[in-house]
Length: 156
Image (cartoon, rainbow, N blue to C red):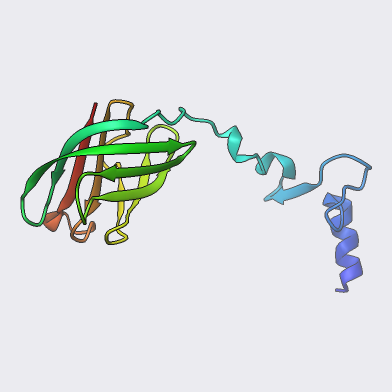
């Protein structure tokens, strides 16, 4: 079948070349035998709203739990938040000392440790304006018998 014939058939159903055939109606896509306006499947991300990200900037106190050694060390932290961008600067040197990342709506943190590039997240629950727990897998997260997590717990 030639391209012109295919285009003519498609034009009759949904418009050809991405344009509507009636001067303003949205182009249609075929989903099985059901027609649906293309616009309804391309909603902007902002339409999917959830709870706002909590304000976590400021001074914090907490503890670092080293899953490998079992050590528990006290720490202080300063968090800077600019929109969804977050930096956490702790009193630790090396592992767990400095993080950059983002906070998502509802308090989900996704951070990178400057020491080793590992990803730390709020695995156990959302961050709030008064309590944050971030964790990093030390072992394979797919093996529940060997699940070890470095943990930083912060409060204010």
